[in-house]
Image (cartoon, rainbow, N blue to C red):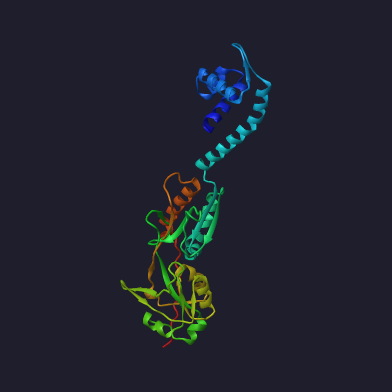
Length: 316
């Protein structure tokens, strides 16, 4: 009913502006007879005559003038709204809300952000860093980032990084007082900064990989955290050994504030993927981000910097 009324009002404005049924009908892409019926129906619904017409001319009545005066700005506003929708359809713009775990935020996402924002200046990003499980649909995020294996099957996942390594590191002051571990079993004699995952609430064992074999060690220590940055800072201050993403710890190792140990035991960690909820009518801004991350993932192995870990060696 409302659609039909809107069509009739649009028809009235066309006739009022053209002052001619034939030209108005051509503008609207309908027959002049259908246009005439539409105007007549509108006048009957309103109970007033809007147009005086003869076989030679068309003129607005006083009521028609008043209706046209109010309709023009309303239709112009609707036109602008439709143009705005078309802009969103055709051009990457607007705000994207993402939820990202802290590891991905500090490594993959932080590295890619400057290039993405430079390539798409009309897109704004709002990023929530959260290691806890998130419902991107219920919480109104456009997309999220998670490690592979933690993405629901009904989501669409796009790899955005390669696999990365985890390392064990400590400050020079800590290692000056405690012999550096040579194998994961030696960790039982160390104060290890443990991590409680926000995803599952568990205090995680430390996983290692050596010559194709994997093992896990249930470490002990005086500090448990649920934030890798806090674990890193505690390690820098000499609290103990920390199990960290290699890229996160790399700047601290490069300037000597941390030293890596057990380098031959570094495990591979799952890659991160960008995920979202539907393939239908994906907004251009999100589509742009997906394509950008696909390219980033393809180049990540070629552009990933090599890190000098400078392994601490205890003099024997």
